[in-house]
Image 1 (cartoon, helix red, strand yellow):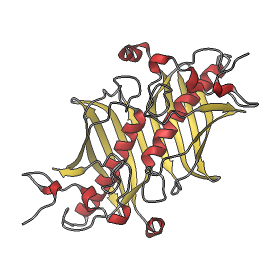
Image 2: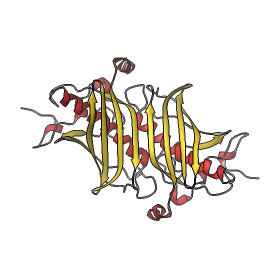
Image 3: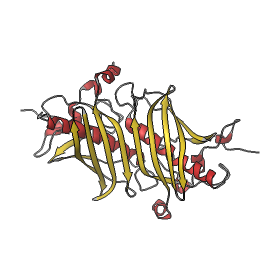
Image 4: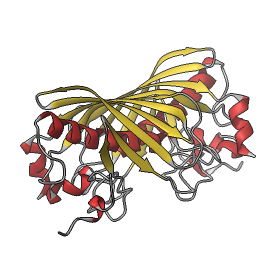
Length: 167
Length: 167
């Protein structure tokens, strides 16, 4: 039985971004078809979602501290991925066996609690609400075990009209 | 009389980022000393602040549409720059004649009203409140005259403790 790279290994859930439809897989933050982008991967882990991302040396706010815009960006894509995961789970659909839904952000809020050291970021997402085409996701971002930023995002399943842009 | 490039031309106000202290001018979004970054410039224009930024071809959400994380990033740096401008104005200090204060983001909120076409972005910032070390800035981001995203940011003047990170 062959498996995609994201499913190799025990206890490693599939990355939702590997199952975005190809015509909407060009996101700079998380699109598998955007070779210039961050290509983050978000997975279900127990009851939560997780994303790990290591910034580049130049992603600074001030030297040694991660850029707040990058933090917002990674929380944004982590939240859209989490929304797809939570929506599939709510519908009883199995992650990794089919094309996933694709969510866009209606609102993104980020609270910067403390300077974030420029190191590997670990994001954990919690399902606040899943209702119809709307999902609300709260996120904690930590570096070295310390939570330095929190995200609150409202995601909407991408309407067909937006997908019309993608030709 | 010699002038810096940002002051050349009639009716062109100085860009606040050109007057950030060098030890805090490495921001990926707006630092003049970050050669890998966006190096956005924010200026006072009448009673508001303005920033113009043209994304790269790969800054996509889906093809033809700008990446929401980039939108959040540009609003973030536009807001910190706007906060410095509004704080200097409130204190009766003259932009461009001295080193500026440096603000960091405590909260960033972005409402995505419509898909943002991948083209030149124009941001206009309004001073909501300036009180002590805190400034609140609201922003409208438009492409081709249509507002597609709004920002609400709470900025705090950078404490000396954070500047201690900067070696």
